[in-house]
Image 1 (cartoon, rainbow, N blue to C red):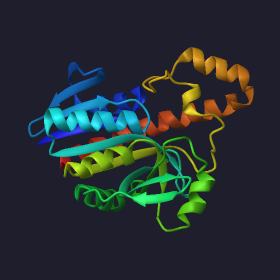
Image 2: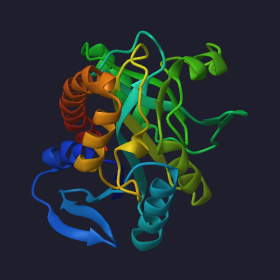
Image 3: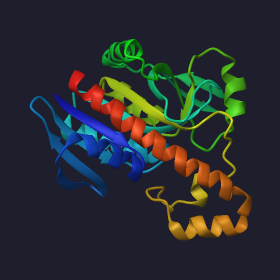
Length: 249
């Protein structure tokens, strides 16, 4: 089976690549990528950069060039549901695009591997659950999103790429599996916008921009330290969970 995997950030790319074994290093257009061959699967892992536009372009290029049998979007997310903790893993049961005017579910075919995997992990006592992925185009208050969703969805999380990838997958009739680890809980409202830290194309975090933002907003330093710790926890959790998932594909 041909599988395309899309991550947004280098930390997410490393978490996935670390469990897939030796890769054929390559560039996919201008994107960082790796090709992995297992006994049963040809896997292309791509780092898209952050946000809707980057994710959509990566998904369209991947489908056009490789015609995968399955698309996977994976990485980190923020918890909207208060019960979710850093390191918990959520598999999408529903994918939603949300903005100031409301929210829409994306009619994408989600892989049936997802619910089977969640059920098995629950039986084994792992913190892996099904939930709703809420994709936004900008950093959005989790409290605002929780009020918008109004308890209609269980285990809701927020991120910025899966909605765009789901739209492309649906348009091309490609099954999608979305799986992410929580890096910041519902109580951790971000006090900065990602574009303050990133290169203009949203592909990389720029150390100089991070430093300048900290100098302008020194109050965010404790939050950045917490997020660094919880992101490492999310990366470890994601790696362990994916190592259990891939043999089932």
